[in-house]
Every structure is written in C-alpha cells, then in structure tokens.
Length: 235
Image (cartoon, rainbow, N blue to C red):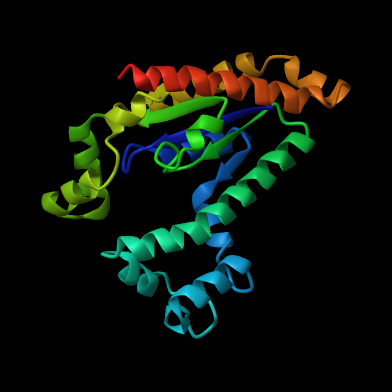
C-alpha cells in the first residue's frame, strides 16, 4: 500500500485538501485527531502527563486542561520536550495501527495528514510527500482574515513555523492553493488520479503474495530516504 504524507503551513489550505480527499473516500490518518485521542481520560499518555506535570493540568472531569498545559510549556523548552516525549510516540504508534488497518482492509493507498510531517521526520517514512502551498503574502492575508488577528500576531505565528518555501523542497507533489476553491478541487482531483496511477496494480500482489507488501514498502522507503538525504545535502 502506498502511504502519502500530506502537510503544509498554517492557512495554506492543508485541512481543506484533507477534507476534499476524505469526501472522495480516500482513507485519511489525521494526526491532529489522533493527538487528541491519545490523551483522553484513561489513556497511558494522560497518566504520564499527570505524573510529569501534576493534577493541575487536569480538568474536574479528568480530561486534559490543554490551556493550562499550554501555559506551562509555552516558554519552557525543557517542559515542551518532556511533553513531546510522552505524546509523540503515542501518536506515531496510533498512526501506524491506522495505516495497518487500511492495508488489511485492502486499500491501495492512504493519506497521513500531519502538520509537522517535515519537522517531526515522518516525511522519511512516506512513499510520497504532498505539500499544500501558497505564497507567503497570501498565507499572511488568509491567517489574518481567518483568525481576525493583527498583522503582528499573524507574522509571529508564521515565524514560529518552518517556512512553507522550505517544506516545498521536501515535496514529491506540490498543490498550489493560490486560486479559487474550484481550482483547488481540480488540483485534488488530479492528485487522486496520480495516486491511482502510482499505486497501480501492484497492491493486489500483496494479497496474492502476503510477504511482498511489507518487503516492497521497506525497499521503496529505503531508497527514497537515501534519495531525499542526497537531495537535502545538495541544498
């Protein structure tokens, strides 16, 4: 099964692309949804967070007080890294199980919707990397309009992230979301056609010859990682 990593920058339209893919019955592994699920009451990750940060980060109903936790880690890199060591492995494990679930159900491909695909290194494990792009100026304009924020606040949020121009350098496919909704839909339709062609007929062999699927995936990812590292070294 072909695994596609989908990412973008804030206000570039990644979530819109993900929704359009989902509406076309493309299986989506949503990292943001999973990140909330792995810290629900009763989960091992929430128990670890409680142990590390105390009862003050819990709501009266036992859920995670995200606002309180955010205020703790906002200006404390050590605390932020401590939280990431708890949450990130849980999210990646849950994502892996979802990907395996789609494979077992016979899907030819699935899309991992991950905001920090590049920053977190997960791009190295995707068969294809798709980046949703728009210009810096348009990104700023959309962010101000979306959140009704000041230009200063919007610029601050953009500056805290890896620039979209740098993410594009990791992409196998770039979706330019600079135009209308109709144009974006056309780009998504074209992406689906490319995925259908790329997945081809080889996915059926993974069922006729079960070991072939995992071995093929490992082989493909191995060579993609080498190619991308060479590309990164040339920048």
